[in-house]
Length: 239
Ligand code: SF4
Image (cartoon, rainbow, N blue to C red; front, side, top):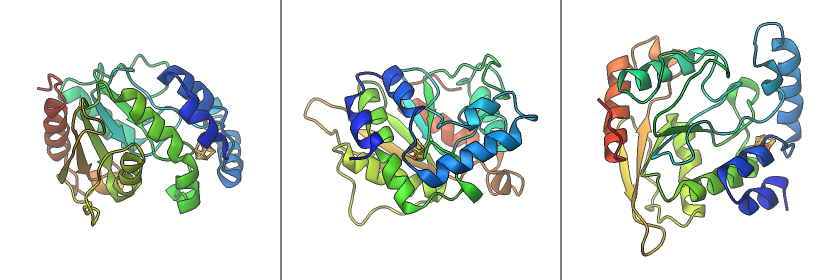
C-alpha cells in the first residue's frame, strides 16, 4: 500500500494528517519537480523551503467550507490565483486581509479551509491521473476529519471538480450517476454519509487562474457571489 494509503486513514486529527502529509514522497516525478522548483525559486520566495515539500491544507480545523484547487508554498499564497481568491474572501468577510503573500503574513481564514486534490505542484500544473489517485487518501481523510463541521465544498475548475467527486464517493457520499458535469455555479447536494450526518453541497467555480480572472471569464463579482452563496449555505456570516 502507498504511504498516503497507510498514513492518511490513521491520522487522528488534521494536525497529524498535515504533519504526515508534509513527509510524503509517494510520487517520484513530483518529488523531483518540487525539489527542482525549490532550488530555482529560492531567491524569489520566502517560502522556498515549502516548495520542496507537499503543502497541507490551510485554515481552521472546524472549517465549514472547503475550497479545493491547486497549491503553491502555502495553499493559494504568493501567486496571482491566490491574490484573486483571498481578495474575494476578504471582500465577503471570510479572510482577515485581502492579500496572501507568504506564510507568515498573518492571514487568517474565517470558517474556510484551502486544500488541494494533489498536494505537490506538478509540472505545467498537470498531475497525471496516477498522481491524482495516489494523493487521494489525504483529501478523503481531510474531509472525514472535517465532517462534523463542513457543509459546502467549492471545487475550483474542472480539474478540482473531477478530482473531488471520487473523493466524496470514497468518503461514503452518494455521488449521482452519471457524474454531474462541471460548470461555474453548478450546485450538487450530496446526502449524508451516515444516518445522523449532514448533507454536503458541492459548488463548481471557475478556477481563479490569471487566464480566467484577467480575461473577465471570472470577474471579482462572480467570484464573490459564488463564495458568499456557498459560505452562507455552510452557516458562515458572509456579507
Ligand atoms: Fe504525496 Fe500527494 Fe505529493 Fe504525491 S502529490 S508526493 S501523494 S503529497
